[in-house]
Length: 162
Image (cartoon, rainbow, N blue to C red; front, side, top):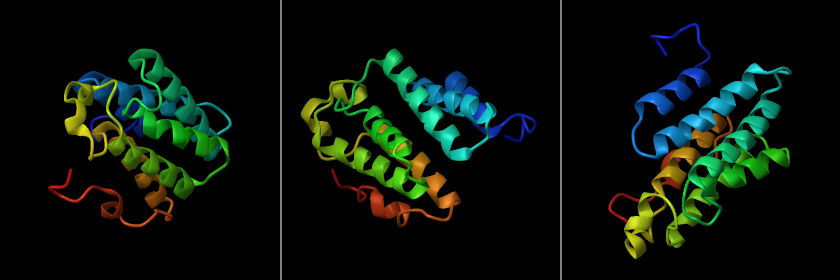
């Protein structure tokens, strides 16, 4: 952000994730930030509408590129309920709660896509890391709005737990 102060923060985040973060999650999260940046730059500047559009378009792009569906134990399992909550008019807290529930639900699912698909049953018991990443984004948004659903540690697996 310091190196690109004139650019919108969501656009900078998109560029960093797309260009500099490795693995599969980096570019996929970059697509989400890219769509969020595009939605926030388009009129009207209503924040809720920008988030609703950006998340919906970001999820569509991620599904197109990554071919993941809800239930595959990926970040899609967090984005889909967040998109639905935004579409239903939920505020930042409600969206964060939906995203956190989606991320937590991945702990009970055998992965069909993503890195966890290579470890099979061993991943069951802990939430998908990509899903937690996305849930963190929505929790942070709610925190900035002064309406976070509890402390972040309330929603993370305990250290050393599966």
